[in-house]
Image 1 (tube, helix red, strand yellow):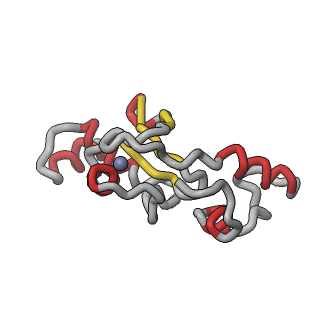
Image 2 (spheres, helix red, strand yellow):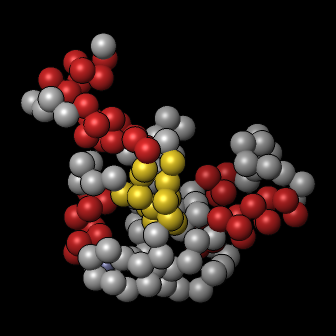
Amino acid sequence: MRLNALAQQRGSGDRYITLLSRLKERPDGEAVSADPPHGCDGMARALEDSRVPLEYLPKYREYGLLVAGGSAVQIIEHCPWCGLSLPPSLRDEFLDRLGAMGLEPGDPEVPADFASDAWWKGREIGGGP
Ligand SMILES: [Zn+2]
């Protein structure tokens, strides 16, 4: 089985960790940790560490814990390491903006900047952290 082969190759028998590290490279190729707005040392280390089931999704400005083996994400609102509030998710705003254009996620007509954080960074949306 491919996952077991990868685990052995990485010198680890832990299939779960291997699975999580693979999930950090999402199947759709979407960046999950590019230039996050909250960058304390603990958060920065966690996002770099493929063993930590945490991701930052730039297009929604969301931090989340991967749960159920990575098949679901639990959004977090405070940094687990320093306790500061994280900037609010822009997922609803994202969907509202697409809806106003008559589009849904995955539609080929979705503007390219909606594939990353460019849509909200370029429009000064949502305020700062
Ligand atoms: Zn922090």
